[in-house]
Length: 322
Image (cartoon, rainbow, N blue to C red; front, top):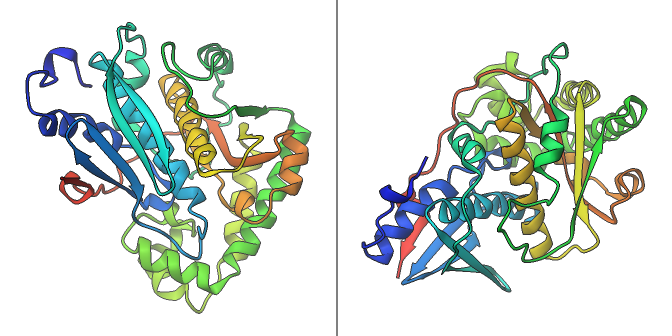
């Protein structure tokens, strides 16, 4: 974890941004796309969506969620060394400028978990208790103390009732069946994610390296959808995040709140994974169940186990200096 004494306070802006952006690119992303790119000019950085999945994510919604997660990690890194981060929106980018912040940093435990974030697509340990009281207490304000939400509001609904969770799991299963039945969707993911562990792509682990070579002509939709439905129903906790607006800034803000939730849960020993298909396939039923006009992501929380880190793109490939 970065410390104030390790930060190059007297270095060049380039050195300082390189130090801070190391934490932004640790953020997980859906399908491990790592969609972000950063352009540094002096004390200012522009973050853009660079890598896209045109079939799986035609409106960049999943990419923006991931960029919001990266933005939250960057804000935490700035806060840890005594800096703030002012955020402004442009049509195709987010402009980030450092600013002074005197607020005491009190998110050391959560920030320390950042290098260990993993999306766990395996079944959770149902006999282990889930410390939701502690998670709720840490999320009372929605953001760490001293943060200023730059857009919103973003709502969070925890689905703990067994009947409600079963209903949502059914929606997740139907959505996965529809998406994985689309050959163009499968071919795009197979081409992008070849070489990654099976759980990242979504197909059953027993198919191993063979699945990416078959997905263009063969559909594992029935198996994948059953697995998704079972994982959701066995939660043991599902959370829905969304809000009353649907602009790019709101997807970014939801990504930040997702990061806040996931880091808080990780600090309490909880694993997570998201269900993007249920949002992409249609939000009406999900909106009615959650009470959120524009639900944007469904995430499950529970007790998992250790996982190896996924491959990361090198910082030199993600950051351009002007």
